[in-house]
Image (cartoon, rainbow, N blue to C red; front, side, top):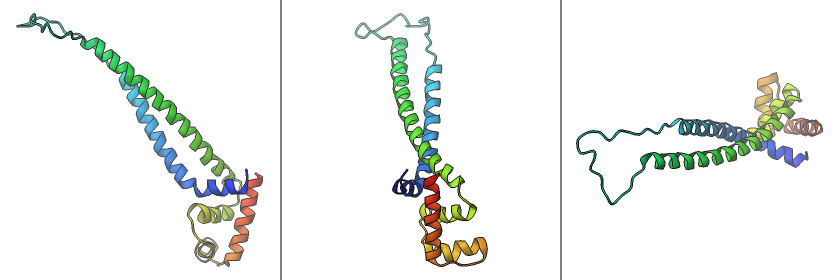
Length: 159
């Protein structure tokens, strides 16, 4: 993995994670729709009763067959949608896990600073004055924060 690819993955991390959660929910609901589609039972009713023997001669009606055909086409569409969602989920999960796995290899300070810089989009000066102060009750210059970011990025690439 190159440095540019890693930085791009870090910048898109939050967005990819949110997309992954949304797609997982869509996949779950689509699977539930598919299950509901398979569970639909078609029933026939008897034609006993008043005026039940009078039928229109102009139209042939077969409710059971049309319902079965409708369910079949709906099931096929849902299966295709599930396949495309699974592919999207797999792609997003690979991107998110690549970032998470590499962040796990960093020390606490490096991880917090990289997340603040790339994922949250904070400046090095802001990180040095605010975040570093919150963690260690000290401030650091933006050049020092940039060096930490560079070292941590190289460390992530080498993992």
